[in-house]
Image 1 (cartoon, helix red, strand yellow):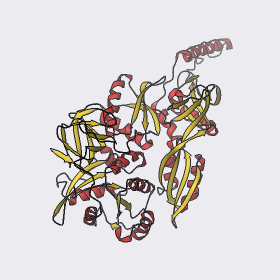
Image 2: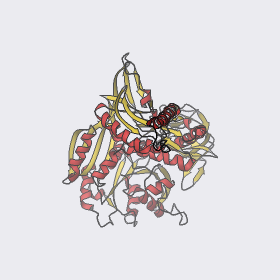
Image 3: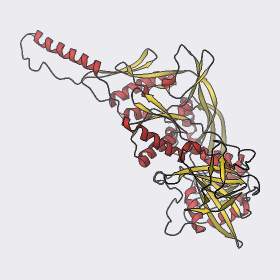
Image 4: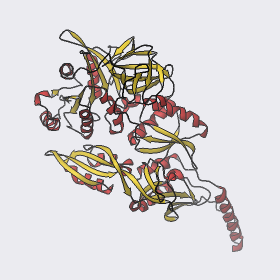
Length: 595
């Protein structure tokens, strides 16, 4: 055990952690020349295209130091705020963390939030200044920021360039010298933390774990604490580029277990594995069912694909522990699922993966957050979509989730960022100058306001400089109303939203105008209305396409023309009664991009 080191890499998006992981694998000869490519650990096409890590990956490296072979287990983590649960599980499986900071950009919001996660688990932090080969690098200034943030010595900070490989050997040496070896008793009852799982269509679910205490041997009978199910450990082993089976693994090791599990509900990330014969006294702390923040309905375009969509989402859930779903039905779209996501990027990624990996065509409804509705009887109902809101006569008040948002930016964008946050009902809590031209702002604001387009707007007003991170703080009372969209007097439930009363009128007005552009013209007039309960607050009309029925009358009595027009009017009226309006998919998406 004394020659084992378990560490992870934490950083903001795009600060170079996947590139550094490539260099570490290259220096330790874990990856052969033939398998070498950029972003080795980012196995999904989607990760490569977008240049972000979506899944955490684990890999084992062997490194010779002072004539002794050391085993280094690297657990790579995503950088985006939407995947913070993955980061927290990866951190729980390690003793040390490389904190990577881009020398051209300095410390950003997610660097800080991930650092606090690591400090909560008492990890040894090794600060690394990356991209020092860039012309725009400011190594001394960024070093000052790091020293101020974590209070280390200047000599503790390693300078490196993951692109050129400069300074990477020193990082490997620092991992061996500074990260403590795992503590744990191989003789104690088995206690292992599941930090990830993947689905293999031949072997079932493969769970990745880190052993805290005890020993596991191939063929042992084990049980999972959170679900209480028991299994045989058919195969255990370590993770290199390929899975390498082992006969026995003990405290401090990181590896995988295959036990023929077929159902995704039985493996939960953060769960504890223990023996049935000698169970551990208590499960590892920190396991929680993930709380989704953003909800949206996902419906198959073709109603016959419903079962196929269910199977696809279940398989996706294995690989992505934070996706939650339950069946629901909508009058406009038929049967589908109400899915819970950690944020908008997460939602976009899930949609994209359903399309690419499972070839599913889906319609996604307007995303919204979960509210707590308190009834006059004193009961509380959780509302995940607007159609689930109780009747106004039974409703006492509604509470909505609030977040504390941290925004780090250059001081020149301070005014416009404050204006944006206050528009979104934010309250400034704190303002700290990190350096003379960088400021950290803390706002308290409703989660529903940042769901749509807050992040995009923030990036555009700060020219991409501002970084954003948030955590949920709790629920507060809110003056919300349900805004319905009616087409020809019938409500389209997939377009209704819960919105603050002050914003309802302008939002309803813009919705009607947008839908007027997107819904194709019919043979009869279509009325598009926005309504709060029974009060119509905005209306647009799509005019009918009509045939000129009086064209054949030239001259003659006016009554002849009138007769033809009356006949046409009756036909249109009858058509309006039987006709129903198809809402195109672009209309559901347009709501997100109203501005």
